[in-house]
Image 1 (cartoon, rainbow, N blue to C red):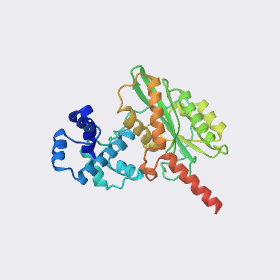
Image 2: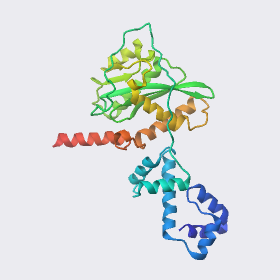
Image 3: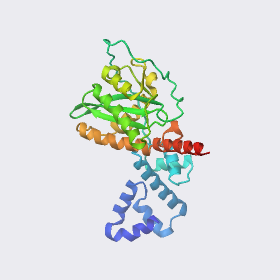
Image 4: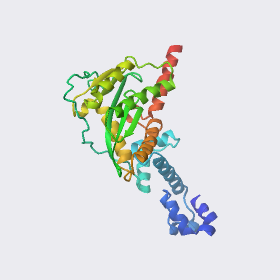
Length: 308
């Protein structure tokens, strides 16, 4: 009980400081409330609300403070808290927390190399829901990030089926090595977990940026047995899934953080965000599961089908 907790520690810290710290952590109780409760007792319902609000606050904070009502409600259910969605919304208002709102990403980083007219065809055709297994389609793109030391560029490669980020890289230059190293990391990620993995037949989709149409990157695709696919210049719909992932990156990490000092700090924070994104973040497009869990379920179902 909150009152009992304050009783146990008030001689050491004082009622007012304890109440202030509890309130800051989502358990709202004023000193006057404590003294009144000592006189009349406190209801079980109020206590249950306080403990539940504190649990929700901790869960919201664990998920980088980005979840709104629906995702926090689903995360709470996954954590074993059987709550109604309206109850979660009420307790979020009580603790003063809310989800982030994603803005529209308008800056275009695509720069087509007009001296190289030949390019890969569009093999995706905006059919983002078509893949039926991991490693069928990968999508890639990069974005700019301002730091106190100047602009950096973060590139990603994402599996369309599971939404998992397989490769990423932060550099101060947006040249071909930025995107080539991401592809190499994605291949290494798959080979590390499955020695039988082969990229033959896989489709890699990007926009028509000069980095992705360069001879060096095209040769990397060919050497790995990957089919290249390219959408229109500056058309977000042709790479909508990747635009969505980058929008989350900007909203959930870049726009909510103070200015990064430089590449090293941006790289460290990006690594932590990617790990959370892959292993904990709930994604609506895959049944509100984390990407790694979604892939695990696919492999479990495949094994069961083969054994039957």
